Length: 314
Image (cartoon, rainbow, N blue to C red):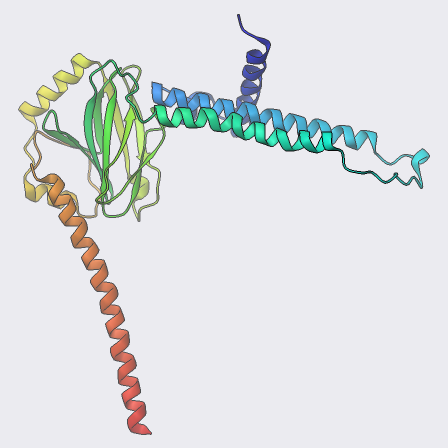
């Protein structure tokens, strides 16, 4: 049996969502983050709706009190020259308006902490997960499947209704991996492995993107997540192993260089791919350091030359 409190929360969340959609002129399906297609996204969606419900309560209460005060204490002919009496503090009222924000923060904090910890675990813990390594590079996404030994670029295939652990890192600038219909975003960082769990409820194609500015072509850092039935996923893996070209170390190194590329598929990737990425990041870091130091030395030499000339003229 649905309690009055639950009905009220649902109505408020619905009212807030409706207002949001009306203001944006979009349907729920047109806003990916409000169209969850997996258990991770569903938990985050529920948290968003709960937050909207609480904020709706606050907005309604504030506007109701505002309207009441405007009407009750508006200027009227019979009140002309009225001087209100001195008022002392009310402990009851002060307690109420102090407790209300505390209650709201607690009501937001408890489910937020719970969901945050839940997202650190596989969405479906009774199913064997799939691991996929993700590397963001300027300006492309590289996906490696350690269990299958294959690799794709700018698209990724996953089995539907199976938890997928994405192990994230970056070559070059920090970036952000985001598939709105399947879950929230997670950062990719050089030489630091991050992880996130995602799962698709059913087969379908979901758009992923970079959620962080990373240079000239970051807007083109989009990719498709193709969720397939487990049978179709296995067929695809076997087909890639038999028909796709192997990826040489030279090709992998070239892929890490800045530039845009189309979707690509490989039946293998270098066994030392992780070491190559670390080496590339260190080379880039050293180049940036040397460039800064070079500029600093040039400034010193130029300053020293001017001082020397000034000394001679003197």
